[in-house]
Length: 274
Length: 274
Image (cartoon, rainbow over all chains, first blue to last red; front, side, top):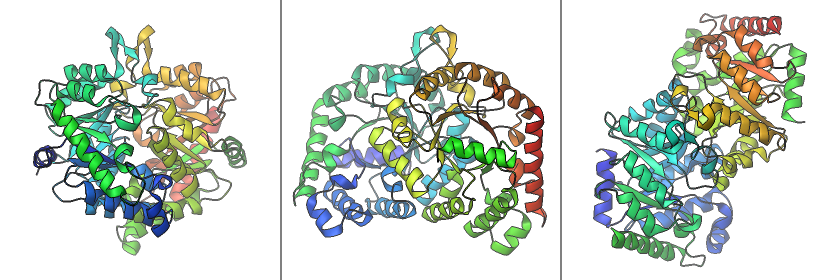
């Protein structure tokens, strides 16, 4: 099943466009988890298993970020694979890896993410250009979200630079991806929510492109504004990511219920705007 | 010891500016290695241990690329850590990871690379800007090579785009890094050798910046031209990476000797130009 079909089905069944970001900072785990499992990888795993179970009814997809697992080394990788296997089959797992390297190396990264982890989709970095992305796009049933505009302050350093004709770099990336989309139905864009007017520009440059939108919640982006701009003509797929605001919604013994409530609430808020 | 001091010491002792790229493609391993160890990770490990032992007299540094290990999953990570530990203490290990993510995530990546792997230096991707690089630069004794101009065809897609004032994006990156270098002595640039005249422009933008130069050998860059342009005013540090042309110099039972000879020869060729 194609990633986009799987995402759409999951989204419709759950009436949700929420992507739950799994960025487990060991220092932020609820006290009850740390008391029972310590501060290490087994605590992270127990916590995420609970979060996934609690939110599976209202999460359109999950987006684990590799960095938080990699800080534990090889064992962190094994744990992430187990976490991916914990995610119910019908809910896509987008691995936030932001990889990018020359052709034969990108092929090895793609094999790692799509085969070893069995990711449904991944994020990649566009800086090295076409041949660094093609090996990922070659997995035609899997999704590939290319960084376009990110939600951090540093986005201004290079992504917003004006290129010839006054076109910012991120729009140049969006236009290029829009061209690639004609031959690669599996390509999408990462478009940060912290500057909603820029999502409008991205939608103009790539009207049908699936968008993965980080930056609401803890990062300060306005949810309603992001949804309105992301819809475009109304039929292009998008999901809105929240990590901290869902993962750490509660810090007491009912943390899983609090996460589930935060996820459902966000799903409803999005659908109200849609 | 600061990474740059360690690199300089290694370079002087060995009279070499060769960086040996460890990009082990299992399909390219010598027949004798595959016969003895199969096609998997143990063959990769045995091969790299031989290569490191054989080239340790003439390699200024080593640059393992994470992708080739990650294609084996978590066990690949464990093997890479063992490989890093195999590299003699006085020779820096530059982990080619090309990571880049928002602040707290970049911190987790930095911890993974500098602490779990104990890398002396890493490569990072600039697309997400300052806050994605600062956590790496915070490890002041370790080196951070920022992708500026890469050696692949896709470099033309975005890196060569003219920004306002007619300045290509890669030069904009080089200028920014040159500014950062005033407060972060540990920052360097990746400057691909396939377009030597562009290394000249990078040297003008960042006169004292350490350069890591890939793209000679199998990728077609001209070694002498790269060396001449990389020297700049003659005292800025640089190393020239070769992967396939050293790793696969021989395919017979004497593959390690052939690699050692290829590495020594390249070191001499560089010093002749210098």
